[in-house]
Length: 130
Image (tube, rainbow, N blue to C red):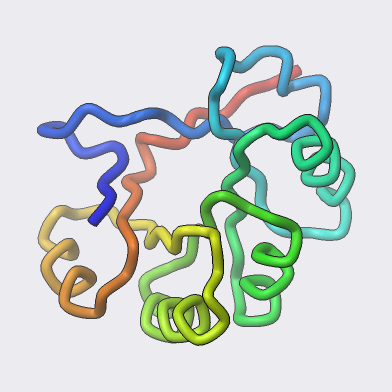
C-alpha cells in the first residue's frame, strides 16, 4: 500500500496547481494535483503532453473513468468512493493508482482491507500559486 504524507513514512508531495503557469513553481519531477473539472482540462492536457505525473481528485465514478482516460498517474477519491473506485480500477485495469484521501491513520487498516492502492493525507498536497 502506498502512503503519502504520513509522519512516519517519507514520501513525495503532490502540488495542487490552479493553472498551467503554477506548474513552473513546482520542483522538477514533481506530481501535480488538480481537481477534475472541465476548467482544468487545459492543465491536465498540458501535463499529459509534457509527461508530467498528474494526480486528479475525482468526486464520482464518471470522473474516475475520465481521470483514467486522461492518463492520470494517481486518482484521489474520498473514503466513500474507495470501494467502488478500487473495483472499477481493477475491472478496467487502470494504470493509475487509486489513492484515498484520509485525515487519520486509523483509516489505513480499513482501506488496506478493501485493497485500495494507497492513502494520501491532506498535508501531502501542497497548494501552489502562480
